[in-house]
Image (cartoon, rainbow, N blue to C red; front, side, top):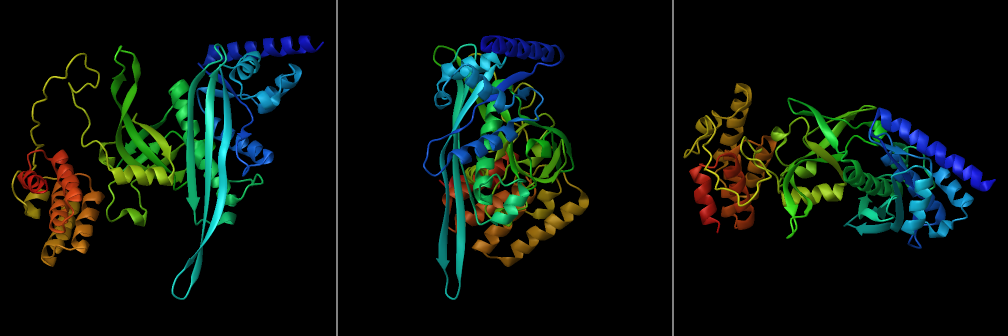
Length: 439
């Protein structure tokens, strides 16, 4: 009788899978209950973490997630040990019976929350932090082999537990900060998994005057304030035998979500005050419809912004990334129409910027104000940095930031700003000279 039930369950699962495939190319997956690999996470915590991770995997166009209870039922019916669920062959067998292409096995390897007292002169403040590390493997049910594995650690701090509990909905027995850390880690892992097994990245679907619309919304776990990296695929990476190992990632910009609807969200340049001085968030003006995006935790977004490795221009006609054999020398690009070669006068340089006349006037005034200060100090440097970050095409502000950094003895920062100015206007001689002096 038991074998008949399993056979019927398997036949029904395959029939459902086949009928879905006729309509769409949907990949069915099962997610086993996460295991706790740390004494800091109870078995109940692991179950809650599995639910949080599952929430980040559903509501996608190309993936259908079966209920975890159905997977557990197969384990019981087949008398498989639930404690042995992390064995790939066991998981593959159970997933196969349910008509799944993949089974995701996961574990929580770290879950902690700390509280630190910070003593100032007359006050004492409390800094609270939470940290969670999740690990996941994707098992192909046909072969029993892991086709993808990764882990991610997310940290959060100094947010109200009560506020975060309300923001993320039902409190699953975890503190608000732990829940936020787990959700951040789950978002990153699920995003990578979706891209690996179905190439389903969140995409830019519209760009209008700095407003960037993404095809992910509240139903996919997007929240206002979330950071996303906008990127494009670069050159293929090949092994010595020619095997394709993957593609390089070309970072375009880091953006922040400010409006969330059920199926989509809108984002723009980052407004965080901590990013107004010495931060470079990329080139939002280079974002185009179809570009890929992925969720970033605060720590990851801060790291990418600190590194500042973003493309200075999009590849044009003839700039294909995939080239057989040695890459031919690329001719030196001519400056775009209106770009200055030698002058540092704001009126002359900014006249060639691709912005409105009103924006040109206000930008010229801001430059002149900094010039009148006649100082090479940190405040002047921060002023030029803010100008350069507020418009990605302001190569004069980038040059001036480099010149001020050089005067302050910050040679590494100076070279970075001169390089940024030259990425916009390769023939800008002041930046070329400044870079030579910074070596």
